[in-house]
Length: 143
Image (tube, rainbow, N blue to C red; front, side, top):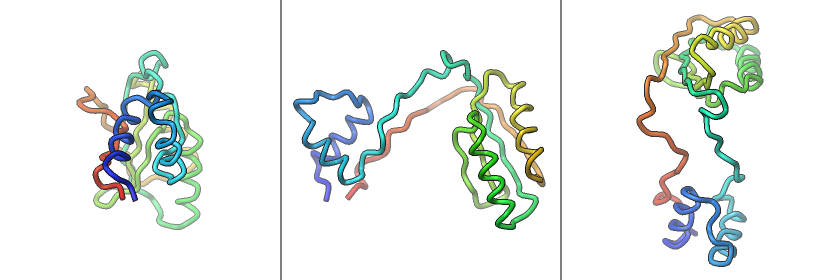
């Protein structure tokens, strides 16, 4: 069971994982052991990494067979520019978040997918501006 102190530490860790070792090492170790803290990663600067452009691709499946879905999952997993993929309800089956050096590079990614799996429909939207971005989770719901 998490208490208010645990929630505060989790919030702070999401802001700066380099918190004072002496002040938080035992509580952080305990939170690690509970599975509340996922593996720590370095968040890289997208502009310095050369991928400032975000494209969201909305995909409608051509087939709903397990083998198509398995192939699709493998294809998108092997493309590093695709950083997020969600299976959706509604008019589209999947949404992909694709990070690119420039918008023209989207064609390369599209062709990588289309050569390996049949798609019914694909539409893409280019992000014009990031209004909010982060990975911090709300901690008040944690038990």
